[in-house]
Image (cartoon, rainbow, N blue to C red; front, side, top):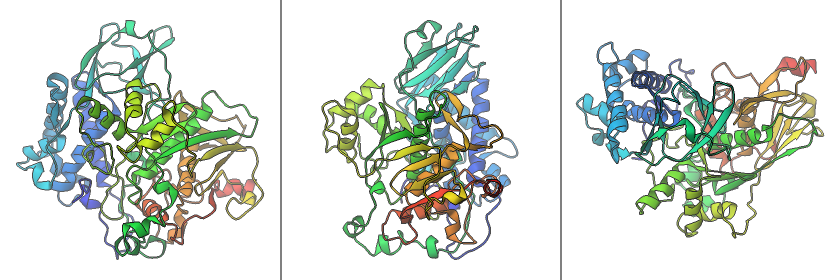
Length: 553
């Protein structure tokens, strides 16, 4: 059994047409683990990087998926993770886990799943999971002059505020950007690259030695997905095209002849063009490219039909993002050697949460690490032999001096346009779309609307248009990148379909699913990876504004 087959309670009955279930056990386990872990950490004066928090949640979900029965209500989740009506079991396990990381810093650490199983008289090995993972965490102790300061952890999607009552910061090893804001309001940048299992003091005198030189990591998360279970008939566009004839009855070689480029291309170079002549806030282009990279990371997380190494590296201008798993494996290969750099080798199943699926989840929700100023990772990459993993040659051509750039089949361009194109069936100007996206081609954002989006500096807004509504550009980009992958609108699935971020009209989807990607859309993504799928978006697709806005215009 594949190591990421953890959410057994998400399996669907193929013939059923019952409505969406109102309870989401995945989200409940996530929120419960996050709540207890943060409470435990606060009691120890520790602030935990959300990337570290996510790994603890993934491990709790492994335990829940393998040892908890009938997770259909909040009470059933709590019966499994608690002792009686208290949080005792989960709280004690998470506290023990945290203190071992902080104080003992072993090379291999017992997972949260293994600890929960042991506390319940079970063995995690009986479910096919290992009991330990490599300890990749680093501890930063705030010196007296740093405690109480306003400190932010930089990411490409905006800074994350660190709790000012914290004395300790727990992060994953590798490159980090911190911004320290003094009492005068001035801020200084601090770049760090702590080693695994290290513990070091973070002093105020270090903060004037470096400046921010890259955009930061792009972190997709389970919040970008709809985990509510939906049961539908597997027919029409929801027929198991790539799990039926195209997967079982054909050889791998025969299938590859019809596999579309996005499922095979190893790297991607993004371009953002401004055709408006308009004035945008500083960082808007970078934020738009970042949101495109975020959308790629979301969709590829659920692409079982894709080569596991596909779209591992993304470049925009001089900025380079790499799959987080590869950054970690490159570091481990430098330290220990004999580490597989091929993502087809499933070594990371215990660290990441699985994307939703219509059957058994396999894809992991993984973001991108910014390696633009990470000299050690770049040097390790450029020293590799091109045949060491399928992604290496493409990555080296994007990043390494002396390597000849190879023109890839897919080179997405995001265009800011102040007017709609000539009316056509894919981008109907008469309906005043917010944006249009072509399968494997360009994405156009129409700036007659006002948009807001997250970037490295925080939330940015496009030009001020008095009286105009403001739309979430992150949601728009995720929708259009779905079309870029060939995914049609949600409505194609028929009356029993799930309206999610792929609904053809902004805000048509119900609250809670309007900005997330469902198992239905991911199933259509996998079907769209084959050029024979009749529902695949061939030309493009548009996202329309709310109906009342179309009528008003």
